[in-house]
Structures are given as C-alpha cells and as structure tokens.
Image 1 (cartoon, rainbow, N blue to C red):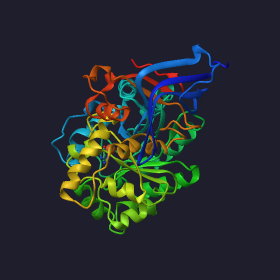
Image 2 (image 1 turned 90 degrees about the vertical axis):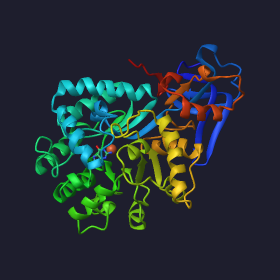
Image 3 (image 1 turned 135 degrees about the vertical axis):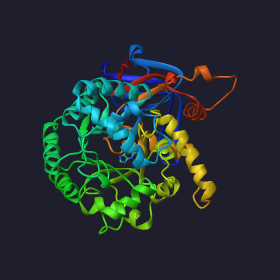
Length: 424
Ligand code: GUN
Ligand code: FE
C-alpha cells in the first residue's frame, strides 16, 4: 500500500458542531498525504502494519486555534496586570513593542514565541505583529518555516501613540500594500490587515486600509469593544459613528472580507447587527479580560446561541498563558461568573468551549479543527497517564481534566498535515 496512507489509533475526540463532541474509542483516523479520510473502528485486513501509528489509550484531538495573540508581547506577559488597558498600553506595551525595530531582537523573540505556541498545542494562529515592516516579515517567515497555519501582517497605528511608536499615515498604507504584494504565494501563512484599534488609527488610515481590503480581498484583524475606558475614548474620537463596530464597518474593515475582532465584550443590539455576518468572528480572550480589568465579560452563550462565530485567544501579553486548553477552562469559568451577575445568560459547557477552540476558530483557515473527510490532519496526542488515579474515566472526562489540570507536558505529539512537529 502507498506509504502516504496512515492509520492513527487512539481515543479520538473532535467537535461535530457547537453542541456535539464526537468521541470514538479505540479507533483509527485514516489519513492520506496529511488529509483526513475518515474514522474507522476496524482496519481493512490487508492494511500494512508499518502504516499504523498506535497511540494506545492516549487521546487524539485537533490542534488548537489561538485566534488572537500578540507576538511582540511575548516578553511582557504577566507584567503590569494591575493596570487598566490604556494605562497598560502606554506604560508597558508601546515601549516593549518599539524594541522590534531591531531585527535581531525580532528574530530571537519570535522564534521563542512560535516554539511556545507549538509547545502548547497551538497549530493555527492569528498573530498581531508590531508596526515594523522588517520584524513583521521575520514573524511571517518563522511561522511559515515552522509550518503553522497562520495569519499575520504589519500593524497600523498613526495617532494617540507615543512619538517613538507611531507611523506616518501615507507610509503606513503604502507599507501595508507592499507587505501584501510581497507575501502572496505563501503556503500556510497568509497576510491580514491589522489596524491596532480605532483609538490609534485616524479616519484617513482606516479608510486607506479599507481600500486595500477591497482591492486585495485580505482579511482584517483588530480589537473592538474591549474595555469601558477604551469605548469612552472611542466615542469622543469618532462622534459620527454609532459604535466601535460601525467605525470598522463604514471603512470597509468589518465583514467585507473575513474579519476577526478580539474581545467584543460590550455587544449591544447595534453592534450585534453589524457583527451578525458570516464573515465576522469574535474572539474571547478570558485571561486578558480579567487581567486588564475590562469592566465586563463577553456574553459567550448569548453570542453562540445567536450563531455568531466565536473563537478563543490567549491574547498574550495582556493574557499571560499560552495554553488554549486552559483558555477552554477559563471560558467556562468566566461564563459562570457572568451568569452569577446576569442570570439570563447561561454558562457554556465543555462541548461549546472546545468547539470554539478548535472547529469554530478553524473556520478562518481552510478545513482545520476537526477529523472529518477533507480536513487537514493537524492533531495533538494527549498522554494523561501521569493523571491516572485508579479512576475509570471516559475520553471526554479525560479531555476535560486535561483542559483544567493538564499542561504542555501532557502533549506528547503534534502533527501538522500528518508530519511530526519538532519543538526546541
Ligand atoms: N487594544 C489595543 N491594543 C491592545 C493590546 O495590545 N492588547 C489588548 N488586550 N487590547 C488592545
Ligand atoms: Fe489583544
């Protein structure tokens, strides 16, 4: 038989939809040339032994999607967590990101950053860069070399930023267009347009970026409706717009192409009307929400029930933890806290949070986050043997325990397109 045919044996789990976790015990994922063909309980009789990869009792799950993470904030995670968002940006974040003008610094930090993503089982990622063209190219190349499925680009900001970390409007638009043109025929990494947030972008910059979105059909990644103070400043700066979503929408930066908005905590009906579009995804970043005192919690259950596409983000460095498994547990915990104060919104369950972290986030890429025919075999093998304590658990209970109590030591293999991923 063709060597490209493989059968991976284990306890297989993936999301069928937001409410349904599929669990296939002691089964095989059939993979041809890195693509999933299906799952079966029994192999054909003539299936060669050497094409079987037997993971025994271990769990096989889809690789995680981190749909909002700041690569240059790798060094500052866990620092300044007692500050409010705008204060934290000015005191810690802008001085730290400005250091990425130095390409050697970028190379060193971005290599370590990508290693840390992989170590934690993140195989699909949506990265915020810095404003520097050179550093952003380096990040793009490292992601591509390491094989992750990724979006990134060059950050834009031309106002309300310190003099050492700000761009000229025209230059920012020109550089963004060049970046798009120079990164066109890439494999797994694609360019996105990344305006930081409305506060640091003039209307002229937003409009210019919107033109590029239309011209090149490039996705957009930004922050929206994250914190009480941020929304107040936004209102003052953009009095002619109804809300944060309206600013992006009217400048062709929301819904025109696939759009990712991090946070989306304060979602009134007007914002929801703008978001309720199949091209938009809202990213819940529970760790960051708690750390920088946003003043609210995303109404995850409400948005899920409305059919809004949702994903989970680590939001390193206002989030301090790379693990999206941990993000699943935090999503459930935060939804319970929200429910305590707002009883009309139920808490989310494991199936819903796991779906956000895998299949739902994976919509942004091409066929990742599940094990159905036609999906890429981008997978993690979870070895929780160090957690057994004479208990009979179902695979789904073991998955839950891994999310709450496990860590990267439990991830014993990572596959992208069926190829083993090396971590340093
Ligand atoms: N809003 C604008 N920039 C940032 C950032 O770097 N982190 C977070 N959490 N929110 C932002
Ligand atoms: Fe962020």
